[in-house]
Length: 242
Image (cartoon, rainbow, N blue to C red):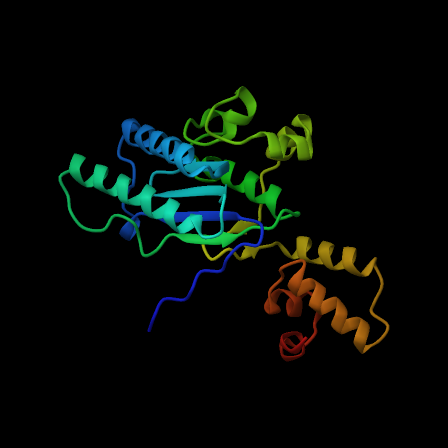
């Protein structure tokens, strides 16, 4: 069976994730992290993409980026990963694959998904128990926002939120999750909150209104059939047809 085609972003923004094969470390020592960051910086200059957040963990990497032209993401990732794998294999006298399967690239819309995703990326080291505060981790873009830097494109997020609000949101440890397929695992409380926002706290009056609500929850709020069914009690078959 052939590989499923990647979903293209209408905004040019992507959440990219890749992992070491069989959970192998991608970075064995500090110089490996620094080599990857320098390679990312050089490629960014050549390909003119935007980098809004990144976090390099020992066995996986998160990138929040925006391509300049449609389709650039494939070229960017091929060049970046090919260069790094060649470096890693040569340095550690190994051969073969280093990256597990294909990297994952999930389209990101500029809405309420964008900021929680950025916080999630920067909080990876906290959830892993490596540090207690995001500023204590050296290999993420968090300190580019706080102290300045020449790799991360910080102006978009800081203008959108303001510095104080950006910092405040990063102090809230998020319980939701963004897995490599791009699905967001929300808590029951968050799902109910979204539904209440859509309905303004009232029950749909009739079938057309109910169906319109379901479509909004699926398309705009990006909730899965199972999430909607669990929170509303509406049959999954009904949810799927809307």
